[in-house]
Image (tube, rainbow, N blue to C red; front, side, top):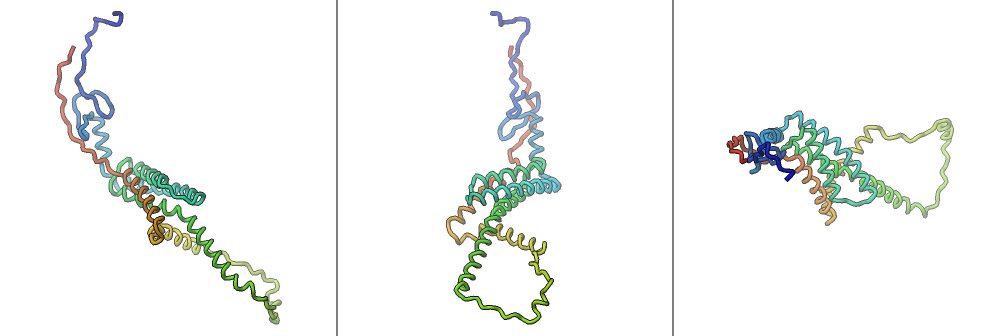
Length: 248
């Protein structure tokens, strides 16, 4: 009985609550996929459904490219150490790049953002194969060099006949191997990256392993596509809330 008080009348409100922020709706409300929401949440939802401008898409591209580089390096280290491809890692790569693109585009999505995210995700996953490709090329070159030297091991070395004046011509001159130029290094790196990008399709003839690799890449691309999709929920309104008599 101590908890009862009779000085103030309490009224039960029949006003609906917003499905997003849970606050009571004052007068105007909207429908979002059949759920009642307040005007403030409706305004935020409508703002998130806008088409991003070219500047925001470019900003999303820059953010996504930075994340793609980070993911490619991390995935490359993992595959180089373990020699294993995990679908879960490719999904994480797609998720991170998709979120980066969406963050750069002011939280907006759309077809352009989806294409950017998918391309960057494919680039990050395939470029991560670069260390394995380089390692395979070096091992192949080493095996080829060893096989070329094998027939020469049984031959006896023949003494070379000195050429008159050759010693004087080369005396005092140090011969050093020329290092490859920067342009040649960049060209070689570009060829290796191109091979890495095309590797999933070039390896289709190798069997089931190539198909599994393509499926792993697909899971990552699918996640990037989902993260940058535009909000397609149906927003309807505004509607006016009918006045109701409070119940004592």
